[in-house]
Length: 80
Image 1 (cartoon, rainbow, N blue to C red):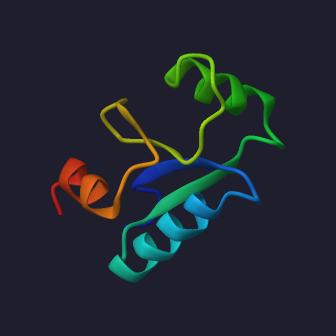
Image 2 (image 1 turned 90 degrees about the vertical axis):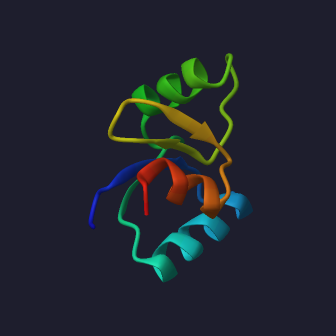
């Protein structure tokens, strides 16, 4: 399932590393976007989080987002 969701993250975010590891183990595909390297993505994350650059922010195919979701929340949203 490559590229199932987009995960906005940073290199130093422990929550991002944890969620990526969990999604890897479950076979849930994602495209990782580092907001520190992509100003447009940083702006998107700010809009999704009331002006804050909170990561991980996950964008789903239906256009909705979750901020710092649990693996269970991601799976529920994807229906897996």
